[in-house]
Length: 276
Ligand SMILES: [Zn+2]
Image (cartoon, rainbow, N blue to C red; front, side, top):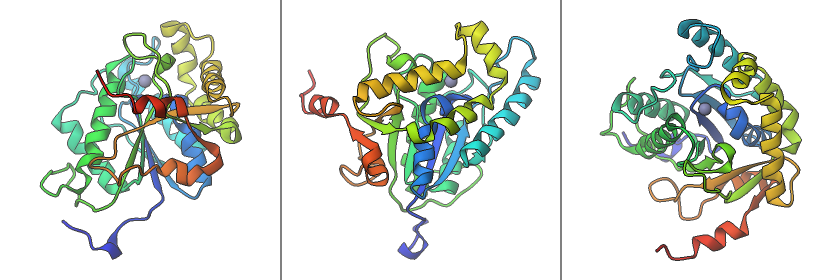
């Protein structure tokens, strides 16, 4: 269905789409908060329930605990919460999840979509990225059916990829941010939102040797800030190619966040180097 211009959706809507409860808080929440300060309506979606993230409770109990925690985190961020659509390690690039996620995107009608890096340490993250990109791509294609059924819309969306875990791809290579968002102003709220995932403190100790997930987030944020050479706390982003999403070179974060957004000139120079 084609929407007449008068029916087109608000210009200031952002959604963060992460794989597991707490991923948004590690990699994206500061930017989501800065967009909220800039007048954006913000949305929060973890594709997976987090049901595998416990050594103490069974899957259904963990799913329930983490749903409550994720709702509290979204509330701390002032974002609209959307329910998970898969379980952990079951985020596959398949039609069922694509139809479900595309329905959420059509409901939300974001003009900024934040999601994982296309290269990351585990497949739930990379598959979330692929699903989010295609769900955004399909927003205006009426012949693609979503479940539940939602009409297609005519609007632009700019897609941004967060930094991968450890700032490296799955083959250990460094990933450079294409741009930085100053998150120092909202760091305290970002930390509160992460702290809402109380069950993860013990789990990340056991599973990944993180003394404290709060400290791990802090270290990441400071490290990206150091790379920026400007901000104390920062999140890094790489902007998806515009084709099929928005006008050439539309950089919505830059327009929205102004002096709290810094393009990484070294990354931009690399873009001009012919491949091969
Ligand atoms: Zn994750």
